[in-house]
Image (cartoon, rainbow, N blue to C red; front, top):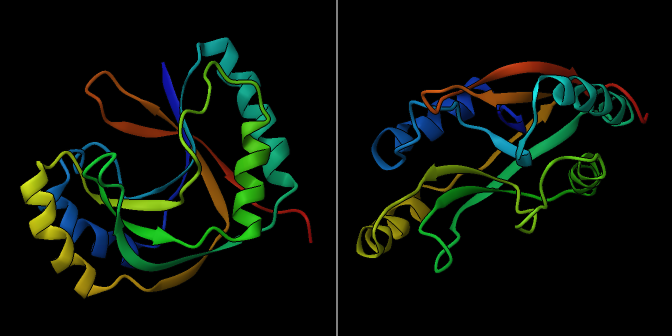
Length: 171
């Protein structure tokens, strides 16, 4: 089964992201707006219990962090995904690194670029037409994130919460 670890922003940020995702993101109905902290990995029922225990240990050593979006950006030309850029604070990067130190059944294939996707799987001309418009709207939010969520993917492709972890340590 596929799993991932994410932070969900506030309803205000989710509603703003969804106002664009409805139109530009084919995954709109499959997952709530989120920031991936640990990308997709495979695990069976026994492995995920052990992984969840390890995630819990990591999270207990991290305090809540500030999620600060600053602008709309794109991964083009690698992919035509458009996103709210999240500032990669030292706390967030360290949390990501500590979660990656856990043994998963995968190798991380991308650099960590914290973001909240608002558009993806567009052709080049659609991307090039929409990006300047979205950049003009801006995306400046700042809020505290005090929990992470271990998600799993259902057979229909949607994602749901397996377990939630509170960021409670490292004062």
